[in-house]
Length: 305
Image 1 (cartoon, rainbow, N blue to C red):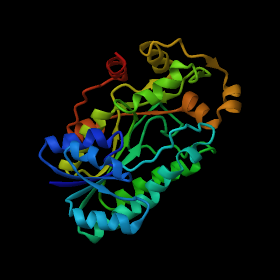
Image 2 (cartoon, rainbow, N blue to C red):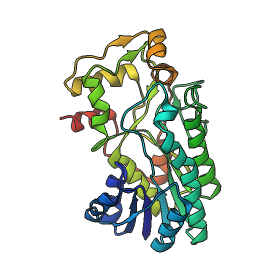
Image 3 (tube, one colour):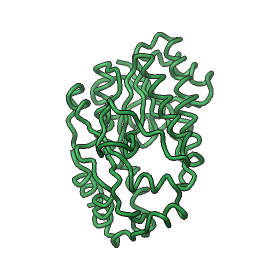
C-alpha cells in the first residue's frame, strides 16, 4: 500500500514511518524543513517538502505521491510552553487541525484517495461530568475559557474526517523518544507542581504504541473514532510523583488551586483537578491493538532507566 504521511518528520511520524516500512508499505512522508529530507530517507520513506497550510502545496504533494491512504500527523507546537495562554502556544497546530485538515481532505478527494487517518487528542479532555474515564461515545470537553480555539480545532478534525469516512485516532499524552525529555525537564527543575489534590485524570500512550495503532487503522481501513491510550488512566497525584521519582527528581511541590489559577491559568488547573481520562477498549476490540506499554508506569520506568 502507498501511504502518504503528512508530518512524517515529527516525533510520532518518526516512529510511524519505520513501522509502516517494516510491514511492506511504500511511504511518502512530508516535512516543512528541507534539512529533514535525509532523515525521512533514512527512515525508509520518500521525503517531500510540503506546507500544510497552503492548499496548492498540499494538493501537489498528494497528487504526485498517488497514495492509497493519507495519514494526517501535522502539528507545530511551539518549543517554549505558554501554559497560561494555550491557544497562543498551539496556534499553528490549531490551524493545521482546521485549515491543514481541509487541504488534505480536498487533495485526497481530488486524487481519488479513499481513506484518511487523522490525529486527534484524548488525554485529560473528556467531558467534565460523571465518571473519570470516558469512551468514544461520550463527548470531549468544550475546554476551559483559556483554550476555546484548541477544543474547536480538535472538533473540526473529528467532524471533517468522520464525514469523509475516515478514522480519527485520539492519542493520549505522548511520551517516548523525542517527547519524554520535554516533559521531564520541568519536573527535574520542580517547575511542574501538583495542583490542589491532583484529582484530575490523565491518559498516556507511548509513541511506539500510538504508531502501531495507526498502522492497524491504515491497514484495516478503519472508520470512526478510537481512543489510543494505555490501560491505566490515572490521577495526577499518582503519575506526577512517580514520574519525578523515575527521573531522579525531588517530589513535586504542591500549589493550592487558587494560586495555580493566578500563576499558571485555568487550563492547568482544569487539567490537574478536573481532567477526565479515556478507555481504550474499542481500539483493542475492533483494531486488535496490543500495547507494548500497557501502563505509563512501565513506559516511564523504561524510558528513564
